[in-house]
Amino acid sequence: MGSPTLKPEAALYYRLNVFPIALPTLADRREAILPLAELFASKFAGSFGKKITGFTDAAKSALLAYEWPGNIRELKNVIERAIILSGGEIGVHHLKLEQLRWSCLGSVFLGILLGVESTIFAAWETGARIRFDSNVNLAVNRSSPTSRMTSRS
Image (cartoon, rainbow, N blue to C red; front, side, top):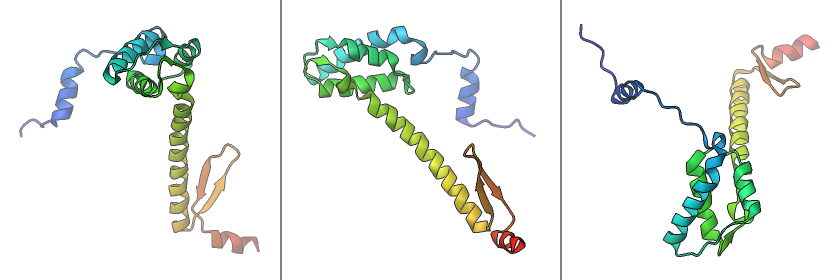
């Protein structure tokens, strides 16, 4: 019997995993946020033919306070959008970070709702009883709702 063959992705993973490199997130490297933002601003200002004078103090504070769940790619996108929206100095209103924060929360909330909806639908199809406890956990009881109603009568 021959040795099992790994898929190319798995083989690549094991080859690269010989020397793992741990990269800290952008949120863990706050000192890199402003230099990267300035680098991206300079790059995009040149690409779009705009004269950017820099960031307001409030914009710098907002950049440093944001958690950056999308890391450097998200920072790059935020700065590109800010350059498109601004005409000189980049302010907080050009960054649209509050919009991003709500967008991320909205995605998480939607995922939770869809998960709950599918659980409720599956329970309904099987005739299970559904109960929510005070911690908003979903509990499904497999006894049928009709047997519960008849036993209480």
